[in-house]
Image 1 (spheres, one colour):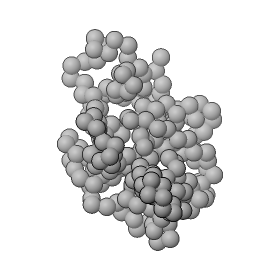
Image 2 (image 1 turned 90 degrees about the horizontal axis):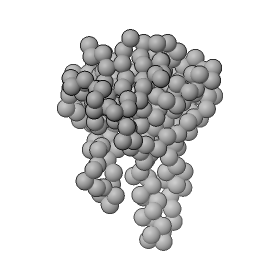
Image 3 (image 1 turned 135 degrees about the vertical axis):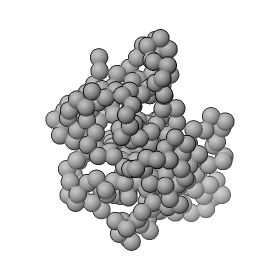
Image 4 (image 1 turned 90 degrees about the vertical axis):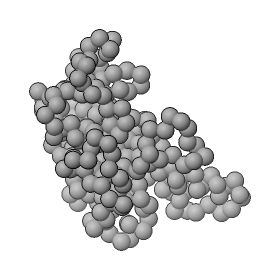
Length: 236
């Protein structure tokens, strides 16, 4: 069974060009995200990943919007989490700001308070958040929402936690809106090795960013590895 939906808007940011995505028109490459739309009071509370997420979210939602939000990240703002743990290990006072913003979906909470967003926020912890975010968004559409805002972000894991399977080397954030429609289909493919065409390139890393490039490409389908399964996204 396939799930049908449409993506009406998409944008993304990362700190350095990623192989295969250099020509993506909706993906911004810069040392730091554009923070012009982030008020100084809010900006001071956010580090690089937080600013990237806020910048992307503010491009796609209006003040007092009631759009639901789906936030997907493997660790959230792990740099703040590590800072809190280090302070505790040294028996030092914990920074109240770091403590409050170390919660997995804290970035979305800060932005929603500033923007007056009235929709619910769903949080997903996944090493590759694209498929889970799409499934959650489509579920919210089925519940009667006309559109859902998805934000997917991650940054490199601090050295103390890093292993040889590290998939994210550079911080990134992307945002897109899922709406009703049938422009795209998503389905899980059993026995994928026999059913996925040889010319179908899988999104092995930075899949959320490659999803944006796929939307604007002439490709008609792509493989999305997730949880040791293969999913296929295709255009109608």
